[in-house]
Length: 101
Image 1 (tube, one colour):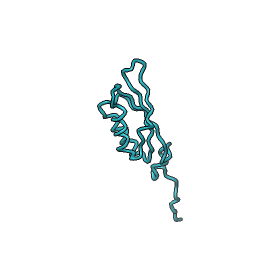
Image 2: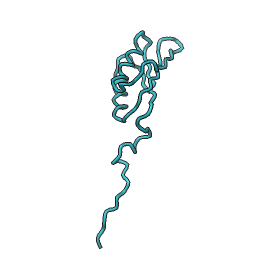
Image 3: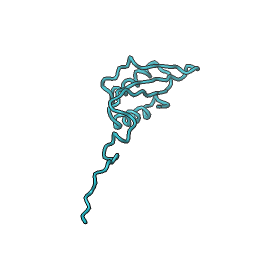
Image 4: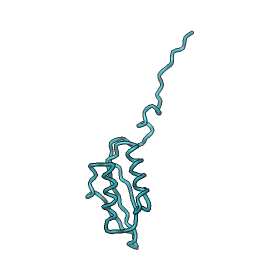
């Protein structure tokens, strides 16, 4: 009796199956840091490295109640898990950033 392998669905063969995100999609990221005149500009530059079509005019800004910190929401067009991982690494290692969500 011969056995023939049966093709099975293997989620590890397609990395998109491991993600809850459908690519491409708009993806908001919250970034917080000390409130400075150029904080939003610095973060926009980082975002543009990973999304060349990122529009800095779409950045939402919220100062903290004390005014010491600034919360930003940047929305990029996510195209892959690798892109998002790279962006998170760049943001979390940026000298002006305190928190990335």
